[in-house]
Image: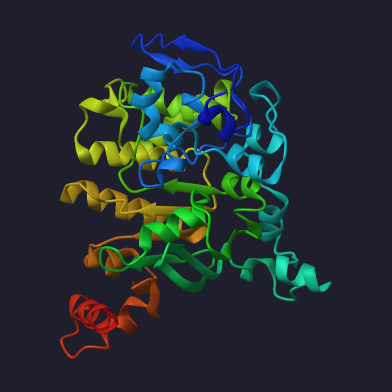
Length: 376
């Protein structure tokens, strides 16, 4: 059994069929785990060991090599979390009701109802958190660290993000932004600490955590030979949707990201900006309460940037959104809060207005330089 098959629960019976739309091979639904909740584009920015996906598992060696870079783009699969936790993953035909219907998990239902919920920390102590569920963080990062040999990429990060917050995650190249996002999405194992999504530890309870997450990674990897619509339909099937609900999800994602005009084009023929929007569309397919977007406007023209920023603003009241960006004007335009990291450590955690007030010039760029150069 190949590595990809072992990594994603032994998907040795994955069938392949011809894509009727373009005549390209595409994983069939049988043999695909119904709980493979695709944080559809997560491999290229992840480590090599994570750059394998369920769609690659049964393909031949040549095709697998071609597709490996986009692997979790089609199946950023909670099956990986299931394999780590030893949980079995049902077949696509037996997708769980939560996945198949898009129903909320018990934790998200509790948040929606305003009930008091027990966090992992309070549950361990035998108590419950007395705060209303609406005040519980949707993202909880606790003393998270990642070391590569003697190099520390992320050094003891702790922060929380609540519903309604749009967090700008800022830092120079090599500061640890993408590494933190990969650990939050479950595609990189932390050296120490934990990351939770609505109370679900992404390492210990990865399937449940990823059902609640939409992840746009660095590079927005896809299956380039698929059409835009074909790729989104494939991602929707991996997430457990079928029939009219699958069609509705795809149509909504196309509309949200203004991709309808290119829906029949192969992804590989699109410009960088359009490819980025395809990656964003797959992250929005299942309408998750948590979005982690690594440079969502990278490569977009001014009009497209305006559209994406407007989309983020419209979604913000109902979600917790983390945006990594080098575009400082974007932080001032859409973010309610900003964290600046340098050398893997947090050097500021304030609102954009508070950050700007730190420097006499009143310019966020000057504050960014001051904070990151001091930490260097």
